[in-house]
Image (cartoon, rainbow, N blue to C red; front, side):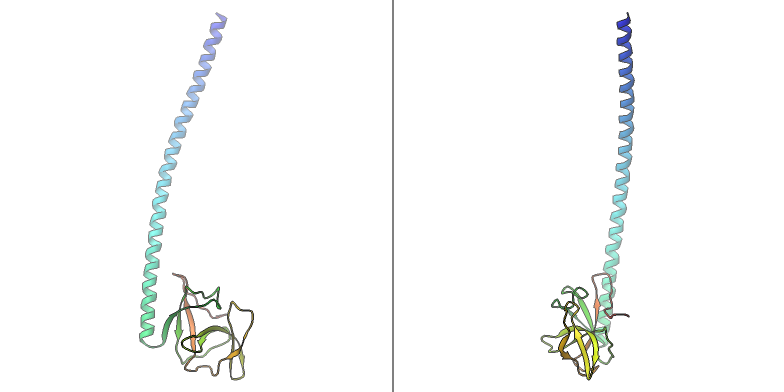
Length: 176
């Protein structure tokens, strides 16, 4: 009889343990289902945010393109794609820049474009020198000794402003 009581107690303990484990398993399954539902909701929210960002970037691109068209039409700006690495990291080969046509005034820190139209130079003004400006590429350690720009507003000189990586707009003048 004693052995039989011990067996029944052991079975009762095993049944209680099984019931606890079963309840825990069911509770865990409910928790997992709830978390999966929350994850699906978050995924939908992330998708909506990504869609809104895409639309905002597209709209900004249209606005910038319209602005460029208007500025080009009135003759105060032209746009061009950048070639070369001398102005990296501020201006890269992927970038589009607006070039302001004369008349304008420049100061130290402005980015200018000049030289042969077939092979123009885009560098930053680093100093005013007698009769012109001394320039240097941002990615260069040496100043352009032979490039002293005669006159502030020569017909061949343009002032550079950049459309950065979409959708940001960056002004490349130092200290402005």
